[in-house]
Image (cartoon, rainbow, N blue to C red; front, side, top):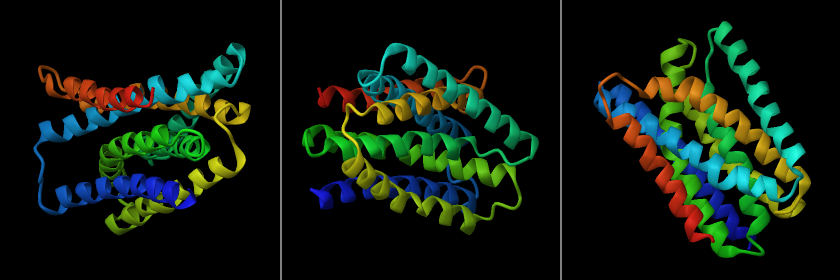
Length: 236
């Protein structure tokens, strides 16, 4: 059982690292992807993040806490990450894509660990959907850090992203050891992160994905959400 969720969450973390490698290849191969393709990847990641909020974090988070607490933690997440994002922007070190990735990945890995003993099918498909989300999010995070600040060297970013391979299993182990899916604390973490993700998507991810007259990014967001919808539907 432990080996199973370590492998599942490790593969999901590897997807984030693989996405950053794609970003590195795009940079070193001199625009490996076209601008439209990049925007589509960004939009896909945004759609997957919204899917995580609407289909995983909020539904499961609300099951274990009263409405007033879910609302409070959701709004608190939005406010806290508004303040973090504004502070980082003023310092010239925007890393909203990286923050959004971890706000998504860590609580979902916690949920994966918490449910694997009682619902293996749900844990398996949750691992699939996390991996599908992490790949474009890793790509977006790499590009954002390289573009926004000269001190973020390629190998430093790849080292940071490689930590996801370790963070995922650790979060899943914590979820397995400490929580059940009906844990009040775990539910509060999920709705808090959902509020933060939603703020970051609409503040940073969606504007970057959009260009007037280009429908591809918007439809990419729909496809990203559809991936989350498939994972959600198959666990019901």
